Image (cartoon, rainbow, N blue to C red):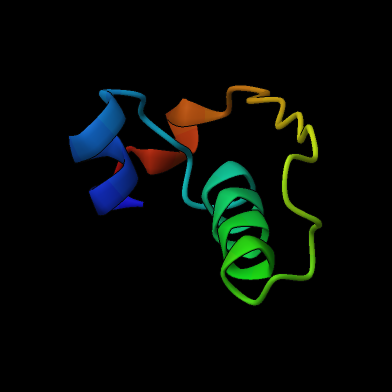
Length: 52
């Protein structure tokens, strides 16, 4: 989550969106998603969950 935010300046919520992004990047790294596929990730918000 922190790496993605630092690289893209897009904050992710810890509960749902960060886990979804991690899972998709993991699938890409494991070549479970064919090359040149189009992947759509929808950031649904929920950033208030990051507040302590």
